[in-house]
Structures are given as C-alpha cells and as structure tokens.
Amino acid sequence: MIKKFVQIFFVSFILIILIPKNYTEIILAQNNGKKIETIILDAGHGGKDPGTIGLSGVFEKNIVLSIALKLKDILESEYSDLNVILTRAKDEFIELKDRGKIANDNNGNLFLSLHANYKKNDGNDKNGFEIYILDLPKIPDALKVLMEQNNIFEFLRFRTDTSNNKFILASLLENGFFKYSRQFASIIQYSLATGVRLESRGVFQAGYYVLYGASMPSVLVECGYLSNINDEEYLKSDKGQTEVAKSIYKAIRLFKFDYDYESGNY
Image (cartoon, rainbow, N blue to C red):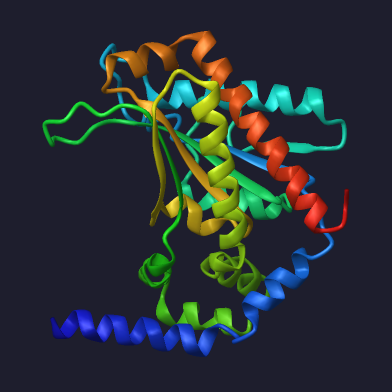
C-alpha cells in the first residue's frame, strides 16, 4: 500500500513539474484553423502477433488489415486532397509505441485503430462492435509506463528536450483532443449501427496503450467478436469487411465536415 502511494505521489509530482499549466491550451491553439488533411489507419497486431484467433482459426491481424486497406481505397477515391497513412500495409509486426510515432511523424490529424474482439472466460457469448477512446484517469498510468521504460534521469531530460516534449507531453495530454475523440467515436457508433450487420455494444473509455501515443483525436474500434460464430462469419466475408469499411468512411466524412467547419476550413 505504501509503495503504491509513493508511486502515485511521484507520478503526480512529475506531472506537475513536467507539464506546463497551459499545455492543453497550446495543443488546441496549434489545432485552431487546421483541417483534417492526414488520417492514420492502424490495423492492429501483425507479423508475429496474430491478435485474437477466431473459432475457425482466422487471425484478427488479417481481418483488420483487409478492412484498413478497403477503407484507405475508399477515402482516396473520394478525396483527392486527403493523405491516408497506414501504420502497416502488409503482414508485419509494428511495436505499439511506434504506431503513435508514425502518426505524429506524418503530422496526422486523426488516428483510427482497428481490432477484433474475443470473449473472456465469463461464460457469456458476446457479440457486436465496441468503440474506445482514451480513459483520462489512465494518463498517470501512461506516464508510469513511460518512466518504467526509461531511465528516470533520461526521462527528466524531456523537460528541456523540445522534440520529446512535443511527442511525449502532447500524447499524455490527450484530453486536449478528448472532445474530438468522443465526437468521432459517437459518429462511428451511429454509422456502424446503421450500416453493418453487427450489434452496437457502445462507446467506452479504456487505457489502450496505442491511444496514448498519437497526439490527435484518436479512436479504437473493436469491429466484432471472433469468438461469436455470426460475427466471425461476417467479418471474414468480403461483404462484411466492405460494409464495415464503408460505414467507417461515412463516419470519417461526417466528422471531417464538422471538424473542418469548426476550424473555419469549409
């Protein structure tokens, strides 16, 4: 108990001394007047990491990559001025920490991570899609993970390292983009609920590591449960993957219109 208290106190202390009080305002000010020009599509897992394995042996990594590729094709066919970046375009393994870096290095304006689910051993047969945004109380946990992965003295150098400040602090202050992440998640939920043959399980907040790294509005979609025979058959099919991709495209289109209009670019 004492050890946990010390950890919490130390993390809180680091947050206070590292993060400028007006950093959220700085992030939002940087975003003001900008429109969505670059979208990052993240197909979960890949390579040595198959993700969840369905009832028939299908790999999550293959299903979400197929959906990401279809979505990229649709976006590029509908927008001539939109840059669509894939964190992976083939069956390769990309570290979680590198996915957010790819998004930031490419000056992304919107981050979407695609996954598929599998029920835990709770005796219930779950089905349907779920949508996640970053759980704000998890930000100290993200900082703790960062501290554990780096020598503390190197970590403290972030205070004076401008490039690291931009990458690390902006991602930890995801609440600067929380409004837009929540808005995007709600639009995706409606679009999928009306466009696919999958049940909507709702929008949730969680501490997914992949959402920590991208300093932009970020959403993770669990497209369905591969442990449910109906969800799996649907997500394995070209029809199902196409309908999921089209529905997410419609959500992106609507969100982009609202976002660009709010920024004075429509």
